[in-house]
Amino acid sequence: MALIHYPVLNRQGEKICSAITNLDIHDIARVSATYGIEAFFVVTPLKEQQELAKRVIAHWLKGAGARFNPDRKEAFLKVKLEDTLSDVIKKISSDCVHPLVLATSARRWKGCISWEDIEKIVQKNENECILLVFGTASGLHEECLKETDGIICPIEGGTGYNHLSVRSAVAITLDRISRFRRQ
Image (cartoon, rainbow, N blue to C red):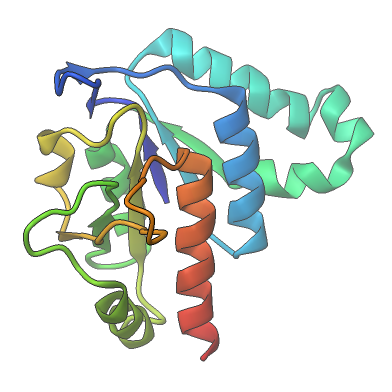
């Protein structure tokens, strides 16, 4: 799984680099461990942001957090830092020939992959690498989307309101995919 901070969009649709947050790293690491994700990549080219992420991770791996709550260490062992989505794809390609790279989006894209089709894909590729790509800010920039094999249709709650935090979207997505694997 990859959480992209650059390139993403702001509310005006402009390409930006969003800030890493402690809560995103913390909560997504825990969800990743809960659902058996191999690695959770935090993606930003900004060295200052990577240093922030390293401090957060170190707190739970070696610092006071590791002593206070040793269970969190397991979750934070999954967190990796990379500069770009391309770097993530190269890194996981060493474990499988060609990972299936699927983007997520709160927007409905023409030709997006339905959750019913995701279920079939997950069951068919049970032993293959699937990389789920999540965007921060107002979503993934077109540069990232071009590196993917498809975009999953948005999570919809049936109200017309669709503005989940990325942490919530990750949890819902992993729960749905996990359910497909358990069937």
